[in-house]
Image (tube, rainbow, N blue to C red; front, side, top):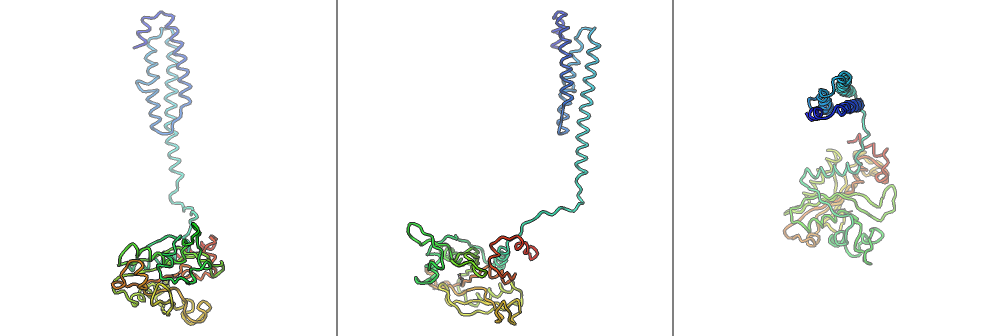
Length: 363
Ligand code: DAH
């Protein structure tokens, strides 16, 4: 419309000049269309609308075509048809190559092929053993409690009834942290500190297991390390007795080491329990007959336990006249050694994948 008005009113030279403009435009569009690319069928459709639809660029050139002088119509008509063919072919080509790509992509996925296995990491044997301990006690109603590894004297020693001259308070056994000239901050030497922390903040019934890392000032060897792992257990309620403790520990030992496992409790001493005991299990290697593992005795020690000392309950704000409870603590490395016969403790912290990989089959 715009051009019709333009041609009717403009002199003939201008109309000729318009022919040149259209030829130039056709050339430009040819180049533009030849270089077109599209990544999706939607993009091809956009291009079709842009160039070939009723309101597209080529149709509008076709409209203009009516207004050029008659003697130029033949040449311009040819060029316009040529352009239209180029555009139609190009778009058909783009459309086809997209669906060909899609077919090729489909064909390249063979769903029946065996998957290439990815190298998967494995759980650390200590984590496996720790999780097993937690799950056995979890099934008996114990929940998990955790506490800090950097502790204070109160939670690790004083609240647990350690006498002032107890050897554990010695620099030779405990890593102390110097702070403002004081050394009442230390790396916890046992997870019994979590007992105190829990009792301070809650009232019975309390039934928890406390897994965690502990530190001791030991020279590193096959049999000792400066850090290792423990799981502590604590049950406080009305009328809790030593018989309850024994039954829970028997159940644990048999689930962990097999239903044939026997336990025995030997009197012992810990500042925070009274009476205290150490628990042995029948040696799983020789079945109790005596071997190198049990040093010929038929028994191996696995944990310490006892009835929580009333002084400990008092220092944590629990009335020992109403409540009683038991506690136990075991080394995760010790249990892992017995289960997997790992002779050198250092293997647990060296992260040698050849060692760690051995535990995939076990679980
Ligand atoms: N805390 C003791 C240790 O590190 C282990 C222990 C013994 C924990 C007796 C207890 C217990 O709760 O009753 O050697």
